[in-house]
Amino acid sequence: MRFDVLTLFPEIFSGYLTQSLLKRAIERGLVSIHLWNIRDWSPDPKHHKVDDRPFGGGPGMVLMCEPVVSAVEAVQAKAEPPGHLVMLTPQGERLTHGLVRELARHPRLILLCGRYEGFDERIRILLKPQEVSIGDYVCNGGEVPAMVVIDTVIRFVPGVLGDESSVVEESHAEPGLVEYPQYTRPRVFRGLEVPEVLLSGNHEAIARWRHEQARLRSKKQAHEGS
Ligand code: 6GU
Image (tube, rainbow, N blue to C red; front, side):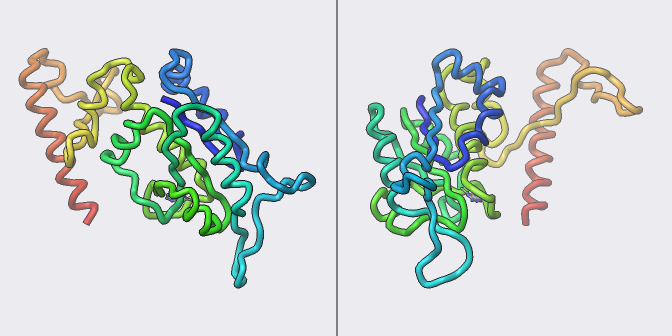
């Protein structure tokens, strides 16, 4: 699966790209990530301007049509297929497990990251992106949300997770049912012991205990969420 990220700050991604799971997926040729600086498509050769003050007044700066539209069109033309365009914006559709799975069906995603006060409205009209938000809060730009999209989507790319079962078994794959508590060594830490059943070797009992714990946790979360 191929991702093309259009951003004003490609360097934000460098640490993330060299992180283990993603790094391994890239090395194995399962995922490729191409970073593009929107500034490179600025029509202004001197200052590489990409934003301007909003017509009608108001705070902040607005990303201009020309560099953004040119950048998206140029990047789409660089490889086949042109890719599914996703605009990261707090006004977008909320990223859920279901939306992640849908996005993962595309062989190529173009992720358009905004900054400042947003995009000129004509960018939406012309490019008709799918607008995606990662939650009910405002980030300073679309870069961290784009990393969230990549991080969640690649888990659905066959072979990316070492253990094929993980994506199914883990939290949120089963709607409303979250993970059970996990323990590793030591058996006692600051007086806190690992539940006896996990040391029993009784796989059936362990499965039952985990299922019950997961149920209790999802119940607790539902109450906290309301
Ligand atoms: Cl996609 N972008 C920004 N700037 N803030 C957000 C977001 C996206 N999703 C939640 N908050």
